[in-house]
Image 1 (cartoon, rainbow, N blue to C red):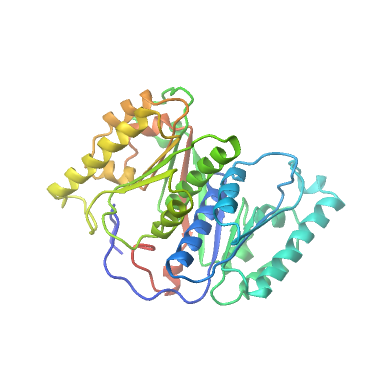
Image 2 (image 1 turned 90 degrees about the horizontal axis):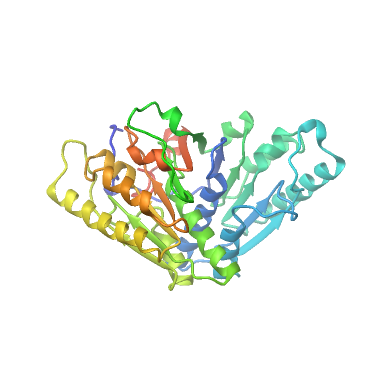
Length: 383
């Protein structure tokens, strides 16, 4: 496949029939967010195709004694789709090493795994999310061989998502997709144009890299914002702005549709671009016009303070293709309200200057992709 920056929307091939095993690991932020974005996508596809989908969210090492970043997102999912989501916590909230693990920790891990095995065997779920299963295995609280055997023999059509640091090699070998999320700081980028700048309240997150999970992480943040609004009885309006996606058939289409169906008064969505890949050196006038149109809307939305979360999906490749200058983006982000969070996604060869404003910069590295196994790719989703 040729190297490019852009989004392909040419006709693709058949839907994959066998459910897949996806692994998101690494030290960067966005693993659980990406999983929740996939959950939202699955629910949305079920609604669009008028078929029943059911999701199990099983969270290991996340006891009830503390709050977690994804709690609000899960609350939004449960309120929006109460008949489709099953959710369970196991473990304790404290961090501990393998030497510090107790009988309680082993029993809690086993309890969660018994439920997971039963859910997988039932074939009643479209998606099973095993959040933080990787560190459970790394701590030696469960038998790796048993887990690998069970996940490898999942029912046809069931998608399983495993998250957390230190995925065991035996599990990675069985995975269809393995994305590592790496945390970065400005000083690591090695570009003299990137100067760390202070933004009041920050609230700027960037998800980049070649791996899958950038847009789904952003959707997880949208869910999180809506969930916070529900719990605090406040309006947490979300704007999802997408560049280079003027066509249809993208992974997040169904997810956004599901969000807007459940929370029509909280989610605004706008696309820009044309229904074709934009190649470097072959940009057309319409590409510049569409990019500028979307940025004018984004700029006004960010500065208005009316949105708690603004998602700028595929902004990075838009700037990398020189369809937009970076400086106006920097100035807008410097002026944003402390209460407004901005999520920026997309791969790029040359990090723009606004990377220096980010409080979180996660690079998603693709170690394994189902395309390498001869699995047909789906239009707008995989390539």
